[in-house]
Image (tube, rainbow, N blue to C red; front, side, top):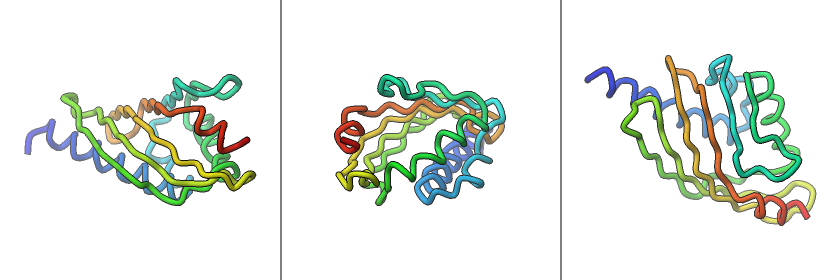
Amino acid sequence: MTDDEGIRLETLTLMQQYQRLLTEARFSEWIELWADDGVCEFPFASLGRPRLLQGKEQILAYMTAYPSRIFIEGVDKLRVHPALDPNVVVVEMTIKGRAVETDKPYNQQYVIVAETRDGKLTHYREYWNPLVLAEALS
């Protein structure tokens, strides 16, 4: 196995752990997948919602709040695309869930670009449709 193949396998394994732990709301384990200086971006976030989180503390504080708003029933579709750079992976996924407050469906599609360094997540960009969230919460 080449160095690049080993890094790519490590990156793919990290993203599998990421999705599993996040879906299971196992946040104390999930945040340990992040580098201390990790960056989490939501470029399509609605007005008034954070678009950039920096560092494990901000990321954890933001993400631990989602179960009070959205109940994730599961991942419906998942496609993982390794990149030429072994530290980068692109993930397409569809989740099924419900808004906790309204009990309306929250069935969202995501495209995620994740970058790693030394076995930790360093940069995560999540692209999703804010209208789906707005409809579920209204």
